[in-house]
Length: 87
Image (cartoon, rainbow, N blue to C red; front, top):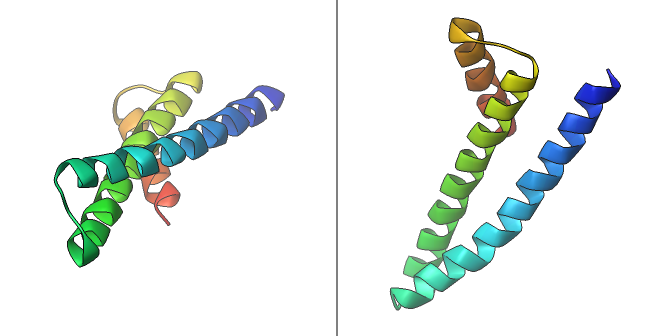
């Protein structure tokens, strides 16, 4: 139980760190594209959602591996985990 809690804490820290990195990366990408106003806001929001989803998949895959899940059980777990993370 303690190991699962440690994994969840590390996963949360990773997601928060990646979200902060995504903010600056998305802003710099918008600047490279010379976007401003509503176009920049739309681009940055989409970029952050995609970055968040990618980090959720990575985190959920790691959790499934820690639980020694494979095949359909792993796919089901990751799908539910990613869905829960996006809420």
